Structure formats: C-alpha cells, structure tokens
Length: 442
Ligand code: NAD
Ligand code: LMR
Image 1 (spheres, helix red, strand yellow):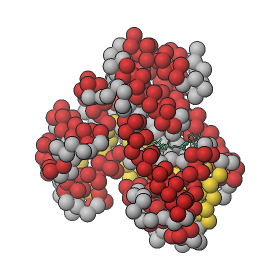
Image 2 (cartoon, protein in one colour):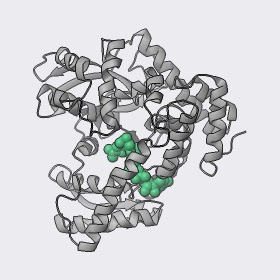
Image 3 (cartoon, helix red, strand yellow):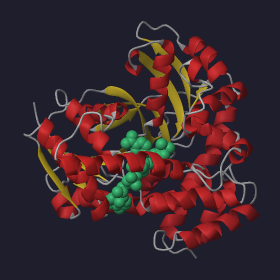
Image 4 (cartoon, helix red, strand yellow):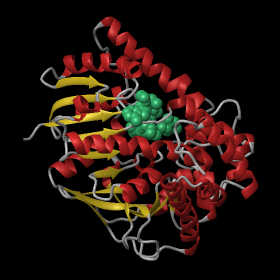
C-alpha cells in the first residue's frame, strides 16, 4: 500500500495532538511516511510540535516528523494538507462573540456577525495556504475544516475554482454519533442518511439502517423529549459545558418543523432572542475554550516535553476526526464512500441556486467529489437558506471588492440582526477590531 505524507496546517491548533493520535490509530487503512506541521505562529506551534514529535517517535518511529513555519519546507512533498487554522486566534474570536452581544445580537464563532467577521479574516488565510500547496505540492489535496467553512468554501469556489480543496464540517458527524448512541448502534456508519442545507444550516430528511428500516420515528421521539442529549439521565446534568444546552435546544427546533431532524446551529437563526438571553456577555464560548481545551492541551504538551514521554491518559484521541481519514482514503483509494460535504449545488438541491455552496451527501473518489441529488426542498427551509446563502455571498463580494456597503448588507440580511441600524453599529466596531486582518473597506 502507498504511504502518504500529511501536513497539518494550523499545527499550533488545540486539535493537533488529538489529530496526530487519531492518524496513528488509522495506519492500517491510511499508512503514513511523514507527518508535518505548519503554522505561522512559531511559539504556539513549538509547544505542540515538541509533544507530537515525542508521541510519533514512541508510537510510530518509522514516520518522519517535521514542524516548520517555512511554507516551502512545510508544503514540499505532501499528499494531503489538513487545514485547521484560526486566523486571529482566540483573541479575535472573543471579539467576534462579544461585540455583537453588546447590541443584544447573537455572538457566535460561525453564525451571525461573529461568523461574518471570522469569514473576512479566514478567506485570506486559506487562499494563502492553498497557494503554497499548489506551488510546492501541486498534486496534493487540501481537506479543509477551518471555519467558517461556508464562507471559506464560497470564497474558494469564486477565487480558486480549479483548486483541489474539499471543505468538510464535523458537526453533522458529531450529531450522527449522538444519533447512533441514542439508537444503540455501534457506529454512525450503520446509518444511511439524506441531508440538505448549507454549512451549519441543514436538516436530515431520511435516516435508515443498513437493512433499509426507517430510523427517523425513534430518533424524533427521543429528540422531542431530550434534543440530541443521548441519555435521559444526562439531560439535567449541571456540569456540562455550553454544548449541552445546544444539544437540548434541538427539541424546540424540531417542534417548529416536525418533518426533519435539524442541525443544532439552526438555534442561532431561529431562537436568536433565547440565545442572547442565555449568553453571558462577559464570558462566552471562547473563554470556556481558553479555560478548558486550550489550557488542558497546552499543559499536557508541556508535560510530555518535560518528561520526554507521553502517558496515554494525557490526550484524547480525536476519534470523531476519523472522518478526515475517511475523506483522505476516499480520494487516495477511489472508494466512492458517501459523505456529507460542502460542494457547489449544481442542481443537487433542485429548487435552489446552482452556484450556492451547499452541504449534501457526496461520493468521494480519486478525481474529487460528486454530489447526490436531494430533490426539491420545502418553502420554509428554502426561504431560510436563500437568506443565509445571500449573506455568505455578500461577505465574499465585500472581501473581493472591498465594499463597505456589501458587508453592511450582509450583516443586515443575517437573520440574527434586527435592523440595518444595528448592523451598521456592529459593523463599525468590527472594522475597528479587525484592522490588519480584513481588507480595507470603502
Ligand atoms: P487554535 O487557535 O487553537 O489553532 C489555530 C491555529 O491556526 C493557531 O495556532 C494559529 O496560529 C494558526 N493560524 C492562524 N492563521 C494561520 C495561517 N494563515 N497559516 C497557518 N496557520 C495559521 O484553534 P482551534 O480551536 O484549534 O481551531 C482550529 C480550526 O479548526 C478552527 O477554524 C476551528 O473552527 C476548526 N475546527 C476543527 C475541528 C476538528 O474536528 N478538528 C472541530 C471544530 C472546529
Ligand atoms: C470551538 O472551539 O469552540 C469550536 O471549534 C467548536 C466548539 O467546541 O465550540
């Protein structure tokens, strides 16, 4: 079997050690000859890289390891770039969340004004990395799960139409893992699903087991009571992080439309007032992540470097990220595996903009991905999606043309923002906060 060289872009990410451990757990189906890390923040990457080097040396000494902040060194001789960058890091994410909240508007990483601000930063970062890949390893594929994936995907569709980039999101996979647990299945792969939407904005329309039995009735019954919280005894657990409330809220989304099972991110567009009311304007998800995941991962990495050895309990193997290996092996081995991916619509959703970047089941093969036809969608979902996809397209217009008005229109059109007046106030603060990250707007 071929052995592959993989570059993790955003090597300093909190997800990197878990990703490396996950890659090492999948060598039987995705053999590796090299694991490389690339980041543009040398201090941040250094801490993670020292631990990864020890882990790889202990667990798979035949795999070559290299961490670099030099694009040529990092991008030369790779087969896959797995991109997990966060342009502006947590410091900027915190502002994305807190600035809108000052105006009683949803403050979230990828939804509403926060997602728009993050998108305006991410486009340049992803294009820069895609260009490095094409220069130094023109045959490689970029598997991108950096957020906000919807805006990044629209930008690369427009600005790098021939690039070998596939955008994928872990949220549907995470929710399918919850569904599998709810149903008592061993794996989400025991389910066949139909799904349509945009990234962080979609619905499961049908879910079957491998024998073709309809699993939707049982799932809906559970979600009506507990949302996607798997176990009734966990439902009232006070020690869970803010994701717990998000999983619970799926209950109310289902009540609004009982036909389909929703992606949890819809809560930000359908229950904006509830979300704002339940947000702490001084302590948002970023603070939770910095005090939790970031601290834990960096402390563990420093310990590995000090001890020169990795204890097995220090990191979680990022098992849910095996979907990235599914995608890589789908391409490498031409498997035609069926996966939910972000792709240009081109008629997959029959009554929707053919140029929209949608999230639908696709077949993955050596020459890329092929979307499957999901047919016509109902008026309610279509209306919501048309509004949201227009926001995403206007953000990319604003980034390309440097138009203040396009971005103001994008914020105004977001279902999370109550008026053009509030949109302008938030936009003007975001522009100040993002100096040096966004193109200059006129
Ligand atoms: P993080 O801030 O810990 O890591 C991101 C890294 O990207 C930082 O080290 C930063 O220096 C680097 N970076 C920023 N701009 C860069 C550029 N232009 N070139 C190279 N490196 C750059 O963030 P995180 O919380 O670990 O998330 C990373 C990304 O992964 C985010 O976009 C996040 O939304 C996405 N994500 C991944 C998963 C997953 O399953 N792996 C799940 C959810 C989200
Ligand atoms: C994050 O960092 O918070 C996101 O990547 C997903 C999450 O955990 O909220």
